[in-house]
Image (cartoon, rainbow, N blue to C red; front, side):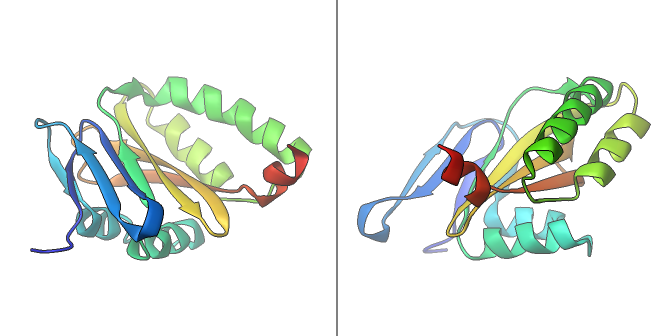
Length: 150
């Protein structure tokens, strides 16, 4: 289908280049994940999923990485990050719920992904099931505040 962004799970980097042309890098193994699949995986009706789903639908770049990480390790990392980002006053969506969900999964292996929206600048961190058939949690971070500090 012309214009349909498709990539493999292992390493997808989709970004809009000069003049709106799309550059796509894909590696030829792993479960196929395309834009429509990712939108469907963000079906939960939470505020962060709605915002991420909209960003993906409007063409935000996204990456879903190969490799698995135990949920307990991610819970510890993101608990600390939540404290630090809250101290900075950076607006977020879904942070506490994501940390709680990660903690509840104990040693279950998860796959990471991200969605990057450029206007306005917003980052979504995705935590997916190991087989990439569901989004376990999503964190949204408004980057406008961070850009002003640089």
